[in-house]
Length: 557
Image 1 (cartoon, helix red, strand yellow):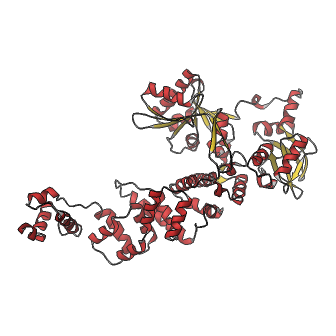
Image 2 (cartoon, helix red, strand yellow):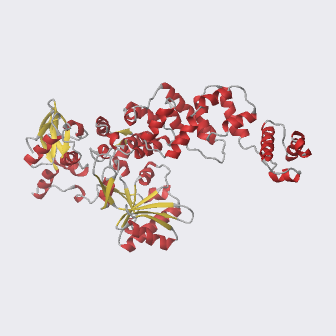
Image 3 (cartoon, one colour):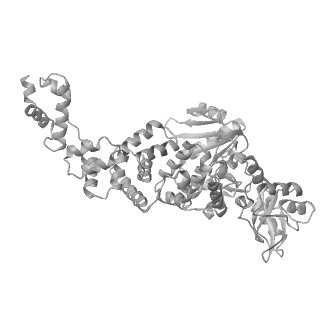
C-alpha cells in the first residue's frame, strides 16, 4: 500500500483514532522528525480511550520494535515476516524513506488472487508448536509425568482440553527447578478438579468466583487448576474482571511473553508446546517483553515483576517494554493501585535469592522513588544488602530448625534510614497487615540501645536476655548493619551456643525437694538458667545443688 498513512509522534492518541476511522485502517506508521519511529495499533488506541488517556502523545505508546523491508526484496520474504514472524505491519523503506507499507491483508489478497504464493504452514492454528516429550522425560520424575498424563486422560473423558501453563513451562525450557504445576482447562476447571479428585484420592478446594481450584494429593503435593479465562480492567490499576474464554485469551492476559507458553496434556497431543506470542523466541533471546502497550497502565505491579524476572534469569527488558515502563511512571501509575498488591510484588522481589540487583535496577529506573519518596538507595544501603546476604547464608549453614523470612531482613535493610513515624507511614502506604507491621515496628525500635548494650562486653546470660526478645530476622539485620566484631560475635554466640540452652530442672523437681509452689519457683528457675548460661552448672545434679545452696533459706521456711 502506497503512500503509507502516517502520523506525527507529537500528535495525540485521539488524533490517531480519528485518522484510523477516516481511512478505515487498524495500524498507523508513526514518524518523528521525518524518520520512521514505529507503529501504533487500533487496539492500543481503543484501550487508551477506555482509560481516558486520549490526550497522551502517540509516541508514548508507539511500538518501536519492528521489522522493515527493502522494495527490492522478494514477496516471499515479506510473506515470511508477516505470516511466520507474525508482524502486524511491514514498512517498505529505502534509504531511510518510507515508500509504503505491507499489511497482512495485502499478503492475504495476493494469496487469494492466485499469485502462486503458498502461505507458510497454511497459517497454522498456533504460531509455533514443538514436541516437548523428550524434555519432560529428561527433567521430570516419572511419577509426575504419569500424573500429567492422567490429567490429559480425565480431560479427554470430560470432552475438555488440558494444558500445562505459565512459569512451570518457562522454567522447564530454561532447565530450572520448578514443580509448581498450573493446569488450564478449556471447559470447566472446577468440574475437572472435582472429577479428578474423586478418581485419584485427592482433596479439592474451590474458588468459585474465579472458577479455579487446587488439588491436594495424599503426599501433600499441590496442583492449581483454572478454567481458561480472560481478564479486563475497568480502570488503570483496578482489580481485573474475569470471564470464561479460550486458551489463547487466557494466555493473552498474562504479564510477559515468556509466561505465555503452554503444553498440551490430552492423550493424542501430549507434550506438544503451544506458543502464540513468540515466547520461545524471547526466551532464546533473553528478553522480557509485554504482550500489549498498555500492560503497565492496566496493572502497574507488572513493572516490579519485569524487573524481578529480568534479574532472576539474567535477561534484559526489551526496548519497547522499557519505554512503556517509563511512560507508566510518568502517569504516576502506582498511585492508582492497591498498596497490598504492590507490597506483595515487592515482597516477592525481596524473597529472591539475591534481591540486590533487582533493587538497584528499581533505583536506576526510578521505580523505587515512584513506589514511595521515602525510599532511598545509597552506597550504604548496598553495603548492608551485601552483608545481609552473607548473614543469611551463614545462618542457613547452621542448619537450625527455625527457618527465616529472608524478605524481612532485606526490608529492614531497605528501610533502615527511616524514622519510626516514617516507617509507620510506609507500612500504611503498602496496606500491610496491622499486627505484622506493628510487630516489625517494635522490632526496629531501640536497636541503637541494643547495640550499645552489646558493646559493654555482657555475660552470656545478659546476651541471652538482650537478644531473646528479638526475631531471628532482626538479629541477622543487626549483624549485617553493624561493623563492630564484638557485637557480631555476641549475636553469633547467641545463635550457636546460647539460644537453646535451657535448665533441666523443672517445677516438679522443686516440689520433690520440699519447696512450696509460688512465685519463688519462677525466680529459682530463672537463676538456674542464668547459672547454666554463664557456665556455673552443667548437669541436672549441678542444678539441684545450685538451688540448695543459692536458695537454702527457702528450705528453712
